[in-house]
Length: 202
Image (cartoon, rainbow, N blue to C red; front, side, top):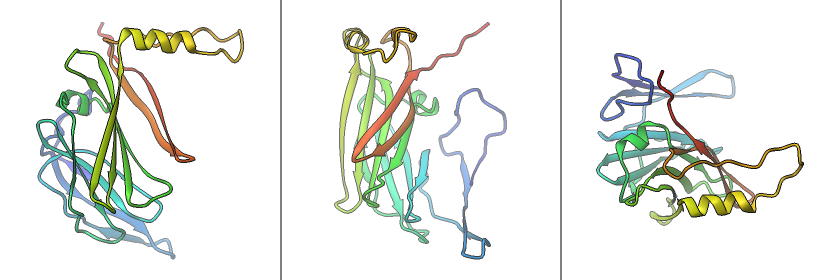
């Protein structure tokens, strides 16, 4: 449970910077009794949090600029690990606040956390930025996929319809806001589902 100092409702997941006032983890013991844990968290912009099947907690934060930091709290610990850093050169707070990002723990290695984040790059093309945080070696790796108009058309043309009753895919313009909708590891592969996100004003 994360308590923030947001006083008014927002359409987006905005006002994240320095807004975390309290963080409490609630676990259930073998008698289904609640056990409370208050992990220490940095004075940074909270982005995402998740846990694995071993009871470890992972937190993604941004200290400012284009830097992303991931920390792991081992099961039952209130102290975070040393942060692992990744840099996304064109990262903006707007992308983080629109929930264009997702983190998921590895189902095979409790030391690994994955990141998927959609944002606009230097050419204003939508880009999918993928990251891997390995807490056993304290290292980070990243790669990217750029959704240019050419790349999107190639994806649409290569799509094989399972049935004629389904329409051909329309991924949309590269200038639209492709965001991450689903992200998970499965059989040693990462599965990312993405779609456009926009707000229609009337």
